[in-house]
Image (cartoon, rainbow, N blue to C red; front, side):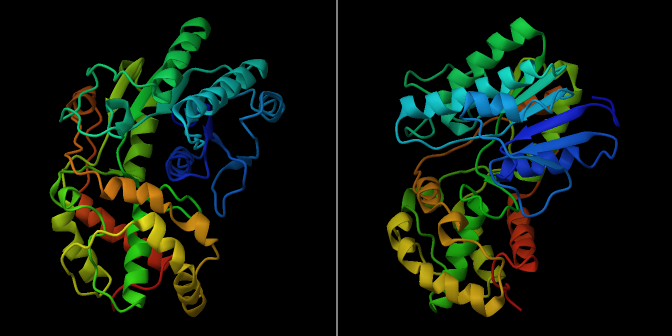
Amino acid sequence: MVAGQGSVLVTGAGGVIGAHAAAEHAKDPGRRVRGLSRRAPRETGWEHLAVDLRDPGASRAGLAEAGDVTHLVFGAYAERPTARELSEVNVGMLRNTLDGLAAAGAPLEHVTLYQGGKAYGAHMGFFNTPAKERDPRIVQPNFYYDQEDLLREVAAERGFRLTVFRPEGVIGYAVGNPMNLLMVLAVYAAISRELGQPLRFPGSLAAYDALYQVTDAELLARATVWAGDEPAADGEVYNVTNGDQVRWRHLFPAFARAFGMEHAEPQPVPLAEAMADRRDVWERLAARHDLVPTPYEDLVGWEFGEFILTSGFDNVSSTIKLRQAGFADCLDTEDRFLELFEQLAARKVIPPLAG
């Protein structure tokens, strides 16, 4: 997409991935950007559409005004308890979006789809590392595969390009989006400090020492813009992370210093259970520091955080393919965490850091 041309639709624009993708596209003043979500975000630099993509009729009606869209960034996601239900709702939302745009006469040129480590079986346990895009699919049902198969089928029929990205542990500024590792760590640290406790890694000892990778949402957004403009990215799948590998053992002392806390040895804690009872602590902090009003249940996904922090195996993917294709942006993960903690505090999402 040439600068100053094209129209972008980002679904899931209320989430950490979608919000940053919309913001990155909106940096081009000549590019029309719409962000689609059921609830209006607190702050935007783009147009908002409120559409429930789970409903085919509502999708078609809501997308009727998007007949100029050339680039679709699909970041919508709905959680469900079983693999079958997960596939039904998420594949359905993608289908409804594509069909709604087609009905509106949109001259669609490119679609970006996001996956993640579950494409390699990271949610099942140990997998071969570094994971590569050419690795075979796992045998278990996976909605990522179903979405990608649908997208490739429709792209072949309608003649648009597509690119699939596989980030891991996405972090970035976002409010009211629980599936954000940054918020898990920031809120856990703030509550621990308020309770007079040192900062302890709350996951498993195996996870404390395992290798992990993180994807900054701003870096992912830049990769998304790149893919929409790069013909060589057509039909490709790319792993995308910050480019380094980390261990929680090495990060937590730095996190403790940032929050002005003592660091102590790990203490496994069932976050989903234990932190549910700390609503009163957070509400006390929010009142004292005049924090951005956010319902506690929308603040952090403790089950999501617990899953990541108890994964006792290396979770590493190769980003060679993406770099060789021409996108070589990278970030130091420790530095980025600390910068983002400062952003959250400055925007009054979390209490102030250490003085």
